[in-house]
Length: 492
Image (cartoon, rainbow, N blue to C red; front, side, top):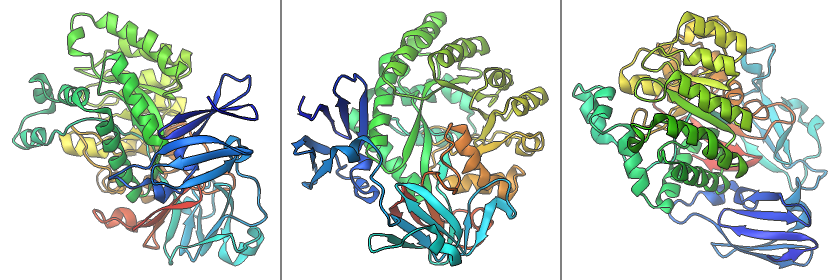
């Protein structure tokens, strides 16, 4: 392992691991910190780190596209050194939605607002006429023209399954012809079909597929998303899928909040349920935490999946080990999973089509976010999640695409806002909070989902001037550009 003044370098395709002398814990530097976000989006040949070697007082990094850059060690181990000039300013906006609460205007709207950025974070937000108060705007400051559009926090998709093999378009045709989701799964389709396709897929193909989906999300304004494993089932396979998610996160502009998912019982454990639950709650959770592969654990608690007691066993062990609990709850049948989420202080309870009145009250009292997934209810012809009942009880609502090959094959988070408003009783303001501030809470990220000083400089700019227009004009992508960590990551 080469060293530079006590620093060890371990090379990975999408990250560098730097070791301070005497410290066994690495400082991971993902590829996205070394190159601009736009440089990471070549889907035909993903950019990688080809080599890294000592060079004077720093590290010389060779990228797979041939570019060679020398980085001072200080810039890799900590935040970029401070500069007098701002890194970027976003100006010429019809309005900026800060999501600051409480606020004089809904969604913290600042008409003719502007945002100043330094070090990948929001340094200032306010009226464009006061932009001179934000700091020095010099020759190095990047000027990002909003072109009279709407500037908002980058979207957060609070529930996704982005790594899998194969498709299930044939099952869509069966459902269109009248077959139920349960019928298809009982016949060997459903989740088990994707498990077989995922196990048969090459790791490089799984990574490429995840990157393609993340790029589609980015084009819809998403800068961060929760991302689950769950299509391998066997412990070694679940570890491998979380590794794919880690590579995807390091080498793509979109950030991931990885989740270990107990999805369904493997077919070869049909008569050994307790053995699988103990293996999952024991060795697998331990290995995931030791390798820092996930920050939360989810259990699908429903008919055909895990029982309430099994979910409690897994999530109690996961929480003790340091993984935040979350639950697929009450989608097809009323199981008490929402109440369990409240008892465990879960980050979120997701789906909730069949939630009881007691479950609603308990989620509100415990402060658990209800992550609603309109796409799954639409595709499976289920009752709409009771958004109005939850919101009126004081439950914070997040929205997610539930992007997955079987029950919600979409990356279009704004469409979930539209369905939420048109079919589930959400107000426009509630829909916007559901893909920004409340979604950030659902993934445990207080630095996302708002445009306030100190927050991550993740922004989306929409080619309209009214927040209602995005869910109102559904099916059309209004995203003009996306900014990730202060740099433009996507332009329409």
